[in-house]
Amino acid sequence: MLAGHLPAWSVGAGQVRTVLVVGDSLSAEYGLPRGSGWVALLEARLQRQQLPARVVNASISGDTTAGGRSRFAGLLAQHRPDIVVIELDGNDALRGLPLSMTEANLVSMTRDARAAGARVVLVGMQVPPNYGRRYADDFAALFGRVAREEGAALVPFLLKGVADVAGADKLFQPDRIHPNAQAHPIILDNVWAVLKPLLG
Image 1 (cartoon, one colour):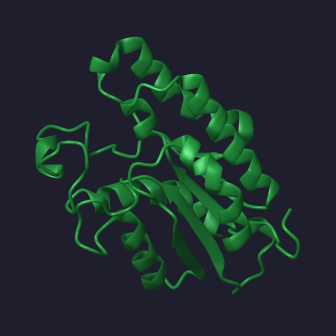
Image 2: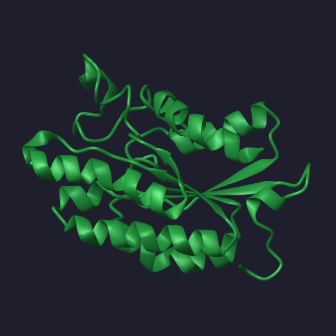
Image 3: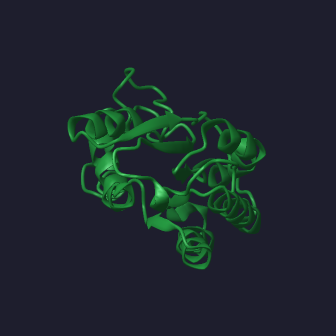
């Protein structure tokens, strides 16, 4: 545990919790007007509900789990988060990286966050079946496995209600990869359902 840092469940009433989001373009407002991404919407919701928490968005467009892992220790030391939201994986799939590598990186980050006294929210993703049914199924399953084995909370599918609904095209930017501003309140609700209980 970082010196002088209490874990989330030990934070006293009224003290401000720090929520660190480590993600890729889906969390970094890629192609969106500033302030319209789900992380910015999360910060606004916390303020509206007068919950004592601040959000640090350390997301980088194009990042992978390996990239996140390489900068993770520095982020923990700098921000001393009470809760860490890990949204890194989509680019691993887009590049066809070995699932064993993705899983190992997620396990490492989850363990490091918990050792630093933070609770972890692991954000799951799914890929289209054109990647191969087995790869797609194994990719979707690894998030639940890591969450169970490492004691993390789980958002099963970040894009639930966005990518898996009729007329989904209207919720995506022209590249058909990145959700548009209309989709991000839905994305926030998916994360909020898991994150809010950890805020106390």
